[in-house]
Length: 115
Image 1 (cartoon, rainbow, N blue to C red):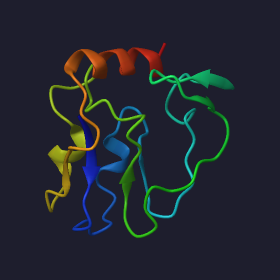
Image 2: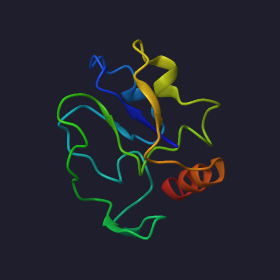
Image 3: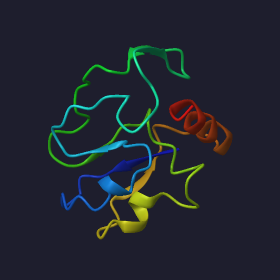
Image 4: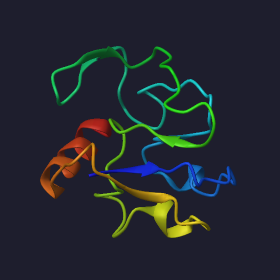
């Protein structure tokens, strides 16, 4: 599963620098697939979606920090546990039931993002 930041977020920003995939952004911030990854130009994501990694994407949340599910690997391939959840002072970084992935899928995503 990916991790999601709930609306209990106090916008402290502790989670953002901990993400090895640069999947965490401040609320209302545009984001790119190429930030913190090796993706460049036109790419096909693991789900078959074609994107331009260099283009801005709409914020997932306008109110508080958010995690881009396509970039979240739960820190698999980097750490033993999701670092955002480990540092969050209000425990608002939780598993995202809307984005269920196996450990193998998360590791494949990590390899894809950092090929």
